[in-house]
Image (tube, rainbow, N blue to C red; front, top):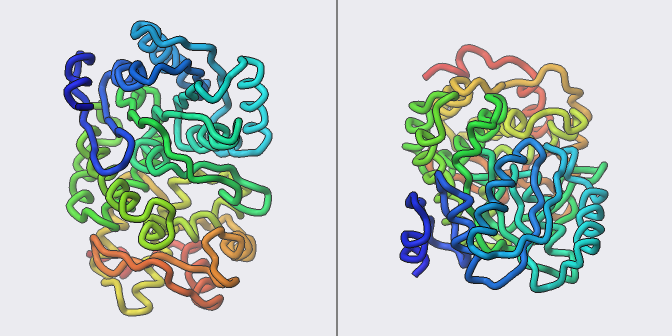
Length: 373
């Protein structure tokens, strides 16, 4: 039914991903696809967007109005991790009240992963929950953050410590918005694509290696779809992260420690890239991950221009940041470790010594043997 409706209403055919209760599409004409999905809901829409993609937000508003969907207003927001604060959520609540939003309204998020995290959390907490939809405009948002209903904000004590699971009504990845992305932001997304490859699609490493960092949006469509399918499959099996969904944290436990130690100035992609190296080193030391596959992953990260070490960070601050990670159980940090390409093990207890050793390695340049493949 959804596929037929989109074919009738949209000039270009989107790529649809199945498996979750809500539609997920990757589209060259994302505004038209989103309007086709939302026009049948009979809801008034409010648009919250990243100011860097104001023109894309305007395109979504125009497409909605063309489908006779009432748009009550739009709200521009800052970019990046700095918006993942309770102050921004309260600001969104104030704006929704000013616009007389009620439970019949829908809040549309147009922007990257940080923005969808915040807007989704605002939707989850306004009037005890209103409907929302996501139009990710970054690679990170398209392959990871925009899918799965995780919403939330950071606290001074750590990352993503306050949030809610609140599924969107629809997710439409805006391929055309990729032309607005600086190269550094594309690299952030590649870190998440490499993560998806290690977790569930080994051949995706070769696929992403073949896409030039500055390639046009159409060249990214297949790679985005493959990475997103990995996440969709895992979320469908464990929507509230009680078991296997924790596997998606590969590289993130150490990565969040690196972000914390940098005062959240380090990009998420860089932190995850080095975090994946650290997880690989832990797994190699335990004898469950081969040096050849470890080097293969590092090669894809290097090719994308992502770092493999972070020499300027204080190891004690990193250790402190990891210790505040929300995934701890009974006071003990749990890691996701790779076993082979396409297979990871989650909920692995790691000792303080193992963690300190991994952190120390991640602050140093890799030895030549580590990169040999």
